[in-house]
Length: 414
Image (cartoon, rainbow, N blue to C red; front, side, top):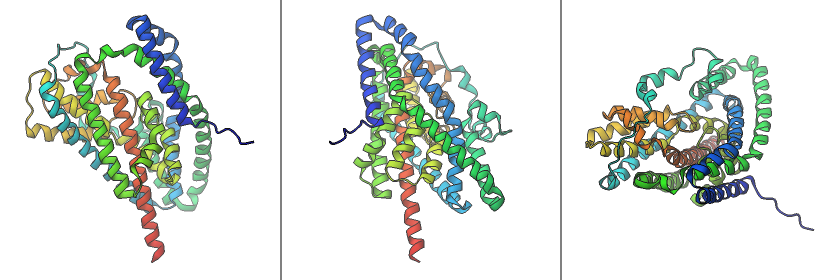
């Protein structure tokens, strides 16, 4: 008798997403927005929060250990350097393109953007964000605090430093490498336990989002939301399709089908860091070497924020229109440069893009107070931009994997 095929994790995540949307919409229609929000926030969202807490719990050791273990697997520091610069160049290039796409789409929509009444609720804390502070804060002053605070950029620096230290130390570093590899294997196993409950977490979070926001949230902000999502789609279809096809020889359809579970997970969790386990599993199934996915994906979850860059550009144009400010070519260029740098400093956690938007607004003279205009629907932007970020990380892993395989083949042929 033929054994019945079990549904994959990706299929269960999709079911959880669809069920969450349906339940949220039914509750919103039957109970009204306020009652539906209260109900889902009281009885469904807490289970989603538990799931997100579990992800946050496992993400710090996962990032720290997987990067170090990935470096150890490469065997020599020269390979780390080669993969590192290819990864960073790829991320910077796609982020710059994302900024241009965001500006073009926003300017096409600009004439139809509504002028809104200014909101009082603003992200005042973000006013002090600047490029030099971001750069300075990348480097930790001790090895423990970043792990406690989950400062992902600092954790990556710690992992890179210790990884390089072990490779350079040679034989004397092997005991430490063995310990880290063993610890990483345990962490991956714990991660698999957490992933098994992800469809429940997705269902609970999605029910709450739909019940809380409802169709009314789109209202006068529908156009700017549409502009951002058009930018996300254009970047996904054009840039990532071309990247995997031209640089890796992979069919775009195969790539998008392979990364779909991670994209759906990112869309609902709004955290590229929390999506790391699913992204890694998807990339491994598409044939990416584990040492490459273990290095590229955690790095990408922190410094590759194409979706965030598009959002920042669209939001800057929109807010400028709302307050009657016309932005010239010089200011557009400033937005591209600042958004690229700001996206590198954006943490891979839910809502972090809103904080970094302040840096872009200040660069072109838009008061950060006006962030409050779009603050209420930031989660709707965040869902799309996080999914885009995760797809971008995977496309980089696919491309780097192909480049390294090609280089190895050339070396073997000599």
